[in-house]
Image 1 (tube, helix red, strand yellow):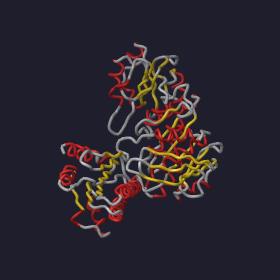
Image 2 (image 1 turned 120 degrees about the vertical axis):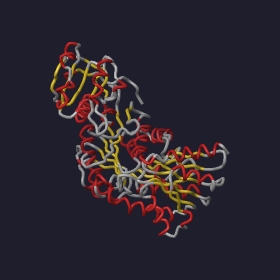
Image 3 (image 1 turned 45 degrees about the horizontal axis):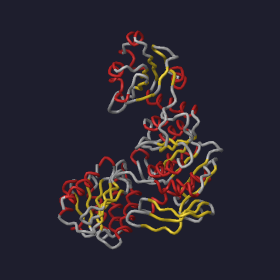
Image 4 (image 1 turned 90 degrees about the vertical axis):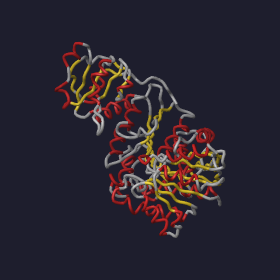
Length: 474
């Protein structure tokens, strides 16, 4: 990964990128960075006043000017109250645009085109963050690589990542997320991916996308408009993703566990902290040992390996990149406290497919020991929420868990689903995060496995922290 300084800007370039109107200052003024966070501003930066649902960046204009900033991008409909004459006197350049969020994407697209970097875009209902991290680890074995930081995968975050491109970057590995129709298409328009990766298509963000068909259209838009010279990396094991192969002009490479995949895994073995497999690279086999358990982690690794294969990395370079990957907190992170418990923290986010995958991992990892599922609500499922939570309860019961805890608006639907599938009602419990930790503390034994999972907004990591604190007390 590179930490070089981003490519500098002139106001002329920013105006060219956004078609904005220069209200004051000079087109020849130069800047080192473009920011939206007033706390990060330096004198040589441009501040973009983003107008969001909660915060309005225009409220911070006085503050950033007082701190010495020399460039501003504002919305046209906010200009009537701006002290333009004062800014003109102080040599501050102010550019007005119709929509500052769109302008941020426009300058990011301009930066992508003027850089020397090529782009890998990754999306999917599950696994896109882990796949992005694995892919960046693989690609950086040979190329100077920029990658999405954290969850910067929307119309704010993705442009901010692209604005960090330096002149020496060769590849950028970007994650594309979505909550509503058209968002992936806009992100693809901004980053113009040379390689597009789709991990899977499942029932996520149904509140905004309406149906699984809507999810498929949205995710598919990443590769639908790629140039014929582009390359699509598709999951051969997901029927909805596999069908995209015949609908796009870009060249396709398939990964997965089935024989139709060019990049696949055989001889898969899982332990408490690792997954081992033989990576088959269109005929060449190499052993890989991931620092993460779970068959779905292997699937993510195959997607990353397929990108490495397309970039002509050697099998050993791909292996090194995959084995260097370390899961981030909240994504199948396993803790083994001194009291003999095994806590699986998968609290970062959740949707129906990732819930099922996590339950499958719990079943395999517990291997006959007692297992406990602590489930928080899955958000953004719209009208499908009740039935999908019921289905997760059924799946939990079928996975052989010993005890079920559920928290949230649909907690009763989860426990009802489990009981419908024959799970004992006395072992299906609803309550607050604090109630759950208290009850677990009175029930757990050494050797038990606990899986904690829920959507980001449910803050299920607090259950994990509560359990760790309790375990530390002995």
